[in-house]
Image 1: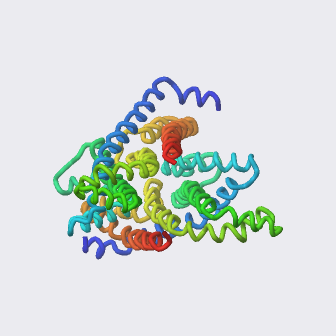
Image 2 (image 1 turned 120 degrees about the vertical axis):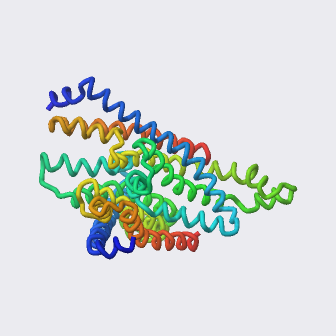
Image 3 (image 1 turned 180 degrees about the horizontal axis):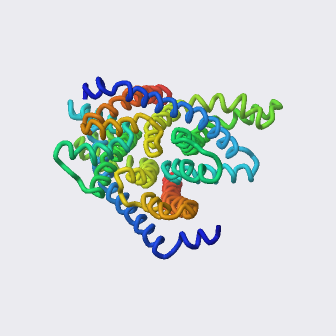
Length: 218
Length: 212
């Protein structure tokens, strides 16, 4: 048994696996940045109630939120070629994750803004700020503080969800572990242990961060 | 998309049935397991709290797909043969139970501590007070988040497609590759998912608003 572990964790295999971790982190960070920006914009649009626009944006957000991420990955990677666009694997994964997570974040942002006391906006308006100034300088900063724990938990989900992109053959950690244990069935348990530990470390670090931010805010 | 429904309607409905079946089984069991670990975490016993903490953190921080693949690949190798549907449902149950444990615990904590004190001072034991006084009140708060968990369950059940679970995603994928009309096939699958998930999530939003 021990020999299996030593053989499975050979320098070559580990280098290959950690390369996968790199891709997991690359896709995660790119999607986190993209979805944070787009999600914040969509959340604000949904909150401010621009005639028709907010309703349509809201509907699109709800549709995306209620679909499985795997389906969105399929749409992007296997569906788009049907329409004449063929994305590469890594951009396709980032695009699908960004679309899905933007919708999730938009919902967090909207409920975060709604949780701010309406008196804050009224006070800002009474002091001569325009609606948008009040939103930008008074309401959004307070909402942001309230949302941070929920946003970090969503990013934890995002990191875990990158594993779903193995289905479009994204060469991330889970995919690479399958390649390694495909060569030798004795490597199965060592590989599962390794990726479980690696995912756990990344996600647990993020959840400790979330809890720290939550405590600091309270 | 209409002709996808016309030509493959039976297959899609079968997949939808498998998706719902797996989600419902996982919901029932993860509710039982999740409540159990939530109670352990709230119990006065330090060891019990530690066990619950470890269980919840492990299953919350490892991707669902890794858990599912573990049951699909490792368990048959050393213990017992399991098919994709079973492996997927077990993975889904364990993963979701950790989230439900957190939800139920938050529900228990939102019940006024005076309820527990009152029950204890009336002679109930800790577990009797939990069972008859605190939990019934906690579940009222817990219903909207649990509904959202069910929506997540339905969406997450698409991981069954990885292990040959014959769920909606799996069937949709099979149809996409046999008909070569990927866009239409995936759209049909999307519509079927939305028919289940959208009404639940709107209803839960309504309940949340009413409870607030």
